[in-house]
Length: 353
Image 1: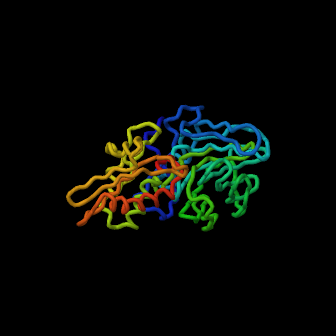
Image 2 (image 1 turned 180 degrees about the vertical axis):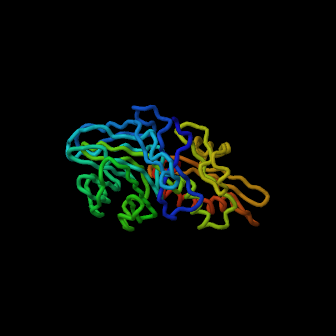
Image 3 (image 1 turned 90 degrees about the horizontal axis):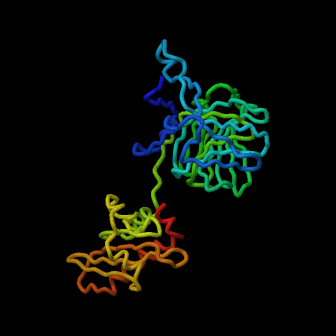
């Protein structure tokens, strides 16, 4: 019988605002025995890549303890790592490529199914790349629950506790990140109290295993603060520093091809709208800026350059006019706003991703 509703049990600490976004991986839309799209399989260390497939398994019902007569479990699609390569320093991971997470609370269920060398399950998070990330893992054979960190491929840690983690049953893992603070719970109980590590502020999330661990994951839920693109951050910071600005917009093409769009604005509703023609002109032509004067304000549009001095975007600075306002002094007022932005960007990708 196919279930039309996915029920998720999560231990959530009140760290994120009510406006936080939520993402759930229940894998109901993935064909059985296939790898879910939007993920990338990697193996850290040596040995064969992991074999990540969606299969069916029985998951305990969260209603069983509350409603007498309710089924104790139900069949549902789960994510499974099925490879049995016994290489010791082998860490198969499945990285979710669709989002970067900074502050978040993640809850997932896992089941240690088999493994002669290891029986482990974990989550890697704030991944910068394959050599820089945090992870929290549970070991059934070792009876340990640890936080560890990888920096340039070197492992630091562990921090955690010895806990019984039997195989063949479902466990619930919760990880919370808030700024540089990290903590974790196992089966609803805090297992790693708050620790402080500022190494990585945001990054990808991945399912993690070790060696020949056959592990299942189910009902993964992430509540997170949506990342703000740098363009919008630059606008927000500039408005704080220059509170007399009437308007401020950043225009860029999301790829190397036009048309350009608004990627940062004092009015967030304008993000995504088409850029005015003068924005393209300051990038495509030799003229270094565009000046326009209205009844009560003046607007200067200047190119925004990356760390190599290449034009990657345009910034429109709108200011109140005053008696004696000239093009020259309007340019002098707008230039410091743009220069400060340029000190914080390396590339177009930094600006819009």
